Length: 114
Image (cartoon, rainbow, N blue to C red):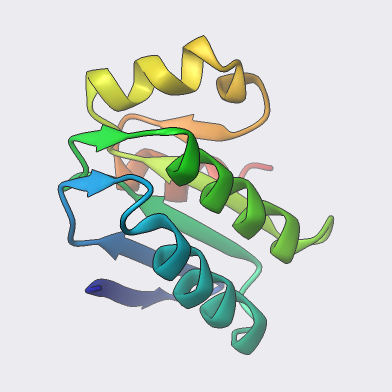
């Protein structure tokens, strides 16, 4: 699985370069992202979902596992979710738990205001 990772000061930006975050890829995605989280000391992770066209419950579970791995002192922000992915967050009410922003730039700007 390919993850584009970029350092933005106190923030780590992670962009999965995949079209589908589903049961076939979610376990590996979870392992790789949790590994990144445990190794880095960044205060926030922005998960840029610009490339992701589809997400299922396995993908959602992997994102929640990453949120838990960050603990209470660090933040997970979602950016660039396409409408169909965003609708899954809304249907499952995860939009109430996750911080979701239309763009990566807005996520960065809003995180600094938290």
